[in-house]
Every structure is written in C-alpha cells, then in structure tokens.
Image (cartoon, rainbow, N blue to C red):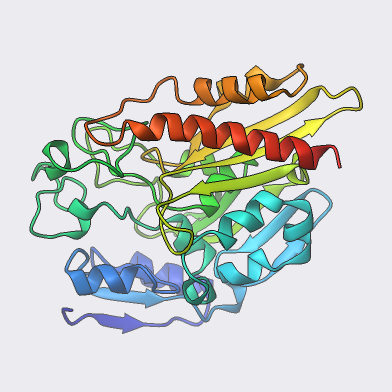
Length: 332
C-alpha cells in the first residue's frame, strides 16, 4: 500500500470543505471494507482519504409518515435487524442478510455499500487491461472468462457487473439518496445514481468528487410487506450473486396484482429495474405461468457471452421464484 494522507473532519460541513479543497483522487473513507482492499491491491492509490465513519450526522434510522430514512453512515447489520425494516420491508432486510459476511456487515456502511466497486477479476487484477481501472487501456474480459459478467447494460468497453445487494432492493422501492456538496444539498433517485459503462467505464455514478451521500430515503409502500430478495450464488455464504431479484407485490381481495416491483441484481452493470416485467403482472391473477413470464420479460434484452449464457435461464427462474414468494407474503 502506498503512503497517503488521512483526515477526519468533525462535521458534514467540514467534510464538504475538506473535499472542496482536496487533491484530485482523494477518497471518502467510511467502513473501509472495500477501499482498503483496493488500495492493498494497487487498484486504488488515493493521495488522501477523508474519514467520515465517526460523524453522528450520518447515523440513525427513522420512520416518518411517508418514508424510511437511513443515515449513510449506518452499519449494514443495524438495518437488517431493525424491526420496521424486518417486518415491513422484508426485501430490504433480506438483501443485507444475504450480503457479505456478518463481520463485514458489522463494519460496512450503507453509503459505502451503494458505491462499492465491481468484483470483476480483470478490474482487481492489475496485470490485466481494464478500461474501468485505467481508461483507454482496453478490456481483458472481452476475450477472457465471462462467467460472472453482465448480461444487461454492457458496452464494447466493459461488461463488469454491479456487485451490491442492498441497492437492488432499494431501486425496487423507488429509494432516493440525499447528497451534499459545495453547492448545497440535492436528491437523486437511486435509479439515476449508477450509470452504465457506455464509452467511459471509469464513471460509475453521477456524484461529483466533492459530494457526500448523507442519507437514503425509502418511500412507504404496501408492497414492502409482500416482498422478498432472492439471491442465487455459487455457495450459500459470502459469495456474490449469479442472479438475484428483489420483488414486492400488492394483491387485492380477488387475487389480482395491483402493485408490482421487480429489480435484478448480479446480472447487469448497474442495479436494474425490470419495468416491463412489473407491468406484465398488473391487473392479473398471480399464477406460476405469470411469474415465469415476468422472468422471461425481465431477461428479454440479455446479451450473454461465451460462459455466462446459463445465467439467463437462472435469472428467469430467480425472478419467477421471487415473484411467487412475494405473492405468498402479500396475501398473508
């Protein structure tokens, strides 16, 4: 690891000022569960880090009349155990239970988790060409092993998969992140936070280098109670998704779906909302055939490579199973 400067301002305002005057490449340090790994690998080499993990302004979970509010510095483990999240937003709780290990969840923060970088082996292996790590250098994955690479949202320059779980559940429930920077505070729909690689894979989100996520807000929704997060992976613990789905449903007294939310994880370059799949369920009784059809629609635009084609059918079945589970919970 290369030497770097360290600062721990005592307030959000002080962090914003420190970021405004920071050297290019300075990074925000929260839980450190990803950043320190990347610094040890030589993938990241910031001249300085600004530590925000002790700021009380970034902690706390609250429930208002209209939304759940999470401080960006809240630990992942604290969210999954919160009674309102566990009982009223099962998909949110399950997305964290199934992320990383308990040790990592005890350290990792929500803000850092949302902005975690890809686990693509070509990105983390500095001996390989990578447009995300070193723009313009090429992409070794294009001719390499692509079993874990994206089926949706890839470009000719990058097919690295977004690895997070919590963001998948958040995007299904129209979450918003509040961000502060030198120009003040602004809100960004989570659906607009991450960007596809396009012609600049090094750009992964819309935040400026001098902006800090301060909170995450989730609008209250009846679909939260009838929801689930299903994650399929190579082993049951501490592995990233081959395919995952966050689903929330509302079903009326006649058995008809009146609200539908579906998001995909592990299969795209960013958290992926499957809007057309959601619409296919609306106004109809929930059947096994309808659940399967929603999965097929969700993956209609998939573009598999040489070794990841099996994940299209896996993803379809993941969505179908998640839809059926959410449906069972919605009518309890």
